[in-house]
Length: 435
Image 1 (cartoon, helix red, strand yellow):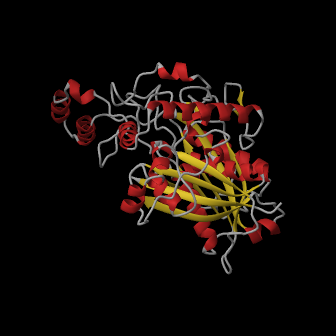
Image 2: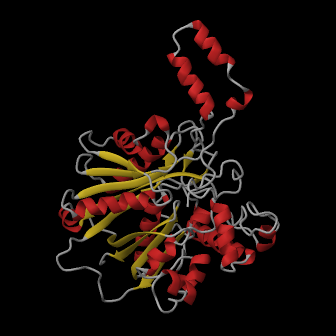
Image 3: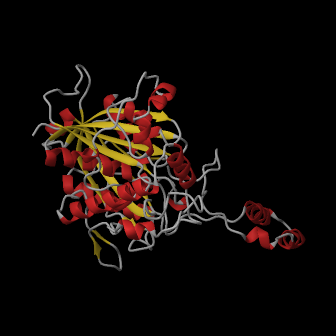
C-alpha cells in the first residue's frame, strides 16, 4: 500500500514486503486458450531505483519517465510512430505534469499522434497500466502498447492549509483595497502550516506501518521473522546486482551529475545491527522498523506489450506471454486473495494467511488452507525492500524481472502479486516464451 509517510518516514519508509515473484519449473502445458489472442512482453526497462533525495533530487517525474521511454526505444529500436498507445502509472502526481504519460512520451520523441494517459491505483499503478494495455490489445483496438510507471519522492507537492488557500483565492477575486486588507488581516499563524501528502489512508485514517504492525500481531509474525526476510532480500539483491542479473536497468545521465547505472538502496546488514533499530510506528512494542521496510524511492519503468502476431511480424523475439490478471480487494490481503485465485502466495502475514484454515474458510470460500509454497522460489533477485519501491513504477519491474528469471532459470510460469492502498490487490501470471 502506498501511504505517504513523509512526516515520520523520511528515513524509515513503508511496508515490510509488498510484492512477490514466484517461478515454477518448466512443464509441457501452456496456459494459451483456443481462440484467445496471445499477448506478449517484448521488452522491459527501468531507470536505476534511487533513494529519494539523492542523484535524482533536482529532476521532475517526467524526466525519469522520459528516460525510461527513451531506454525502451533504444533497446527495441521500434519506430516512434509504431506504438498505438502509451499508458503510465503514478501515485503522487506532479501538478505541473498531471498527465505525465503524455509529457514523457512527447519528451522521448514519440509521435504526437499517439494517445497517452496516466492511471493511478496506488502501488499497483503500473500493474494497472499493463492490464489496460493487455485489454486494449485483446479487444483488437491496438497491436502495440507501451506501459510504464514513475514515482518521484524527492519532491512531492506540498500545499498551503485549506484556510490559507481559501484566503488566497478570495484575495485574487477581491476588487477593492479594503477587501484585500481585510482578507490579509484575517490570516493567522495556523493558516501558514503546510499540508503534506496524506500519511494515512483517507477512509481508515490508518498508516501502512500501523496496518502492517497490526497484521503482524494478528498472524504472529515476529520482529525476527521480518528482519530475517529483509536481510534475505538485501543479500539476494546484492548478489544479483554483482552478477549482472538486473539487466532491465538502463544507464541514465543525470544533468549536472555522473551517469547513474545501478540501484543505490541495497544495503546488506546483519541481524544484530537490525535488532538495534526502534519500532517506527507502534511504539514501543511494534515490529515494523526502517530496516524491514522499503525506503522512499525515485524511479521509472517502461515495457513494450504487443500481440504475438504483431511482435513476430516486426521481427521481435518476445520475452514472455502475459496471461491471467486479477484485481481484488481486501485490506493488506489483496495479495493473498488475488494469488489464491491464481497460483500461489504472498509473504509474511499473507503466507500465514495461506497456511490458515480459518482464513481460507472465512474469506476464500475454501474448506481448508492452501499451504505455503517453498521460499526458495520467492524474489531470488531481491525485492522492493532492497531494490526500492517507486510506487507507480514497481509493477513493470516485477513483470520484467519474472521474464528474465524464467529465461535464466529455465522456468515456465512466474507470478507477480502486489497489494495497494484502499485494500486492493493485483496478480498476473507470466509464461515463458518458447526459446
